[in-house]
Length: 149
Ligand code: DQA
Image (cartoon, rainbow, N blue to C red; front, top):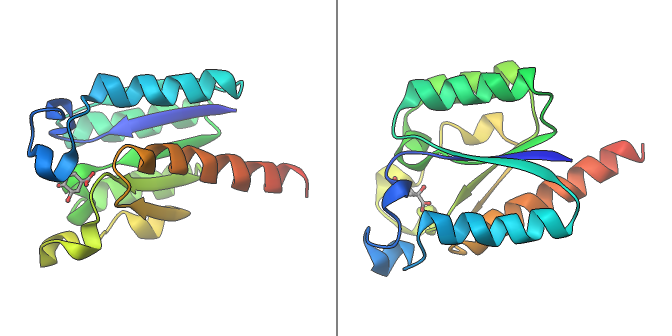
């Protein structure tokens, strides 16, 4: 499968950004962890991070043209207010899992709501970088179920 991993704003600062919440792994550490898994399981992949909403939307649209099978996205703060990212995911209709490092439902009220989630097949939060791996595994499960139908 061709799986793209998309990271939103401020995730480039992982490692030093509020480590008590987001842990001490850098984005490169997290991507390397996923890369090991993706290679081992025979997937092709691409990692992308941007601090800007437009670039994230352009990447989602590019995924459609590239015939990507599934997306794992951490929209970061855009989770809570980007109808544009929601609409982009709806437009491309690629199976997408929303992931978060922190347990967004146990944090400030504004983090409890995701406007992106209704455009996704599911949401995983609170497992640190393991949330991303679980997101990939969820895609593998859903996509292979679909293939066997
Ligand atoms: C986050 C949670 C968001 O609320 C926050 O704005 C982030 C990171 C997470 O992975 O826990 O930037 O998406």
